[in-house]
Length: 179
Image (cartoon, rainbow, N blue to C red; front, top):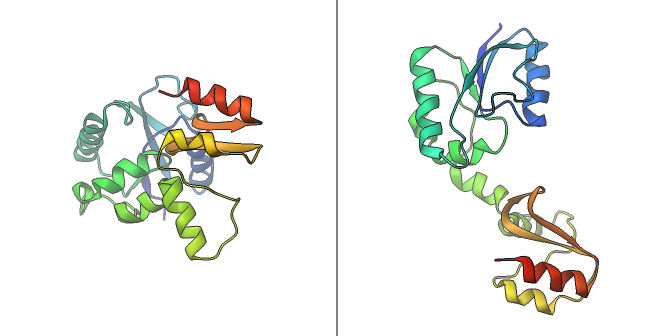
């Protein structure tokens, strides 16, 4: 049975993959995005595009926009495709009874989003992971002497907040560039 689905964004490759997976099954898909010319807007699987506030810089306005969209039109599922999952898990109770929204509680999402918490979870579950050192103070980077390595902010994406470091000189340059 085809569903009517609203995607939380249309700019990421995650959104594109979701569009193709769900669109091929015959579902009706609408998308929201703050970028007028986003990756998924012109997909043959998209019925309608709605320009929304950016969730990262205007989270309250984004959630209010989604609530208004759900008031104006019935959807079977609101599908958080990418980083919006963190915000939407935080306020998922606002959508209860209005639309299908498959999200775990915020604590579970936070455990996966935080690189430090995820590393601890992997260790607890005894699952393999790259050698990881969690530092509480950026100044502790001075003590790192195992290169090459990656320095990562606890909450970040590969495009922002993750730096490859080849040697001590690279670490020094990184430390000088951090706020």
